[in-house]
Image (cartoon, rainbow, N blue to C red; front, side):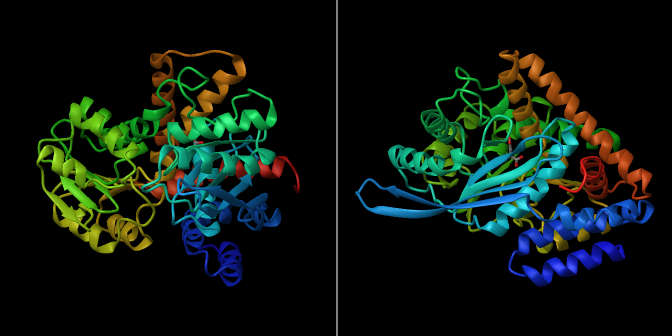
Length: 446
Ligand code: 2IT
């Protein structure tokens, strides 16, 4: 690591040693951009690193709500408005018991560079709550969303901060959140993306993250002389990202053979196709947060408590949650013939796993590049809302495809420029960082 980056990283580690995921994300970026810092002393004299690791604003609030048994519950709500250099804060809301300030700082920090890579006008932010939707009724979820928005509405707006979904927040939750936002602000202005198709949502937004991951993977495969035809894909997760991945991978000739949840994973050797894809939506709305139901319904093996990384595959697509793929998993993947690991979730691989895969010549691409299609189509939803238009799915798909193609190109060119051939982590971080850092200098000390 470059000495200036090392100095800032050490200060950060001493100050907030408990924010481990945030530190993990910062360390990765700082290592990648070290050659850029060496060649551009202005980033040090402008103190860009001290500024970029500090959110512009963090909002933390109480979320009280009443459950179906008339009991009062209290959760914690957050919005981290990390960086607005390139546009209004933009990033999802995560409702999951693992949500802490540190987790949202890692996600918001990643989002800055991801959004930068899309080339659109979006700053970086993230928010959410430690609310657990498992076993909650529709009405409980609605009351929770309304209470959450009652506070959040004070801090967001179409040119200020535009949240979207993430883990635990899909179309249903966005609907409840948007309804409450309108009541409080008397304003239909599109704040929130992932809205319903009849009330301002963009076509393909629900599929966009998974489609984008697949388009990005197709570019990586092409670069190394491959395509999806006949390839076996091991994938984790069964939610927002995974659903789009299974559809598009199948369309391009590949076969996705696994899904996973907190309860374990299923192995469907025939591939997750046809009705099985629709069933993924039922599983999500069923409120059980598990994939065992899939195994029961379609008669395939279920492996309780395990992750799908010891299944033989050509390509692995972790699409569940941070740090779900560790060093042993990486070793198993390599042993079983996996040649490509492309992240669909945000930082699903541990640092040890990434180091091992790269050293073993397994092609690895980070989430902030590969999964940027979701937020990219959110950006397209904002553009449609601002202009009062609704684009066809062909138009949105073409734009998404072009954005993913371009992100791949930025990664390759940025890594090659600094002598990091084939290193998509370096390429994504350098490409994403440079645009933001230059903008921060242009905008002065603020
Ligand atoms: O991680 C992500 O990029 C998202 N959850 C999507 C954010 C967005 O604003 O669409």
